[in-house]
Length: 300
Image (tube, rainbow, N blue to C red):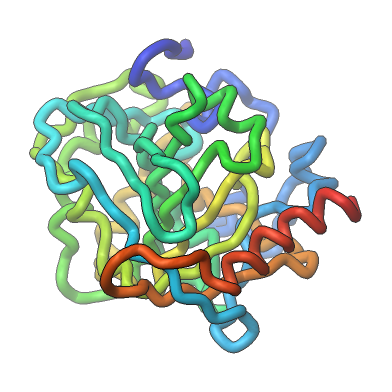
């Protein structure tokens, strides 16, 4: 069963369970199981994600501040679905818009989903949870079309570190897991029990990694500007383990849903420090980033 049209979970980014042609190895059962090949650009692309992010090896840039509109609005009618590959949130009451920084357009939130463990690593460290807030460039009418363009999608990625203190926002999501965790309820959206503001999922945005990459699930479209925050949120291992109880098949739990690291291929990765004050000229590092994207097109 798939869902389409406005605000629904089944889109190019929604990881619809009707597509059984791809999946993840169960590393909890067999740590040596190889990651599968997904075919097409997933295997032969030159700007694939995720990657390992190095503080020392990155360019240093200063961008204007990122601007968030309606992120602090409590979403009282938010919906959530188990699509067999992740837990996804959608159905926002109003447009949640991201702009500023190195972005050349306004981007609106399409959906939010989780990966356990993290997909990106920072200085070779993998974190227990990564939340992706997926945005579509407003100049494109839908996410499917946006995925055809280099500037089509921006993903704000938040990594979570282990703590003894439960994360309140993640706890609000977990409260509704029982209604969707079984295979029988896969692809059946439910209302999120607690009110949730997307701001609650986002720590400080003063510094972040910025690079040109791809979706981390098929189609693996190389249309994503990644903003991976350096500040992390706390989460308990018990909270993460509750996501691992999600079923993707009858009596089969989704113990992990992260993609293996991809080759950097000489891409420019910028470690951004937000600029305070009024908007200024494009930074030299951002120009290098754009040149790096262009060179990938020319060379490959």
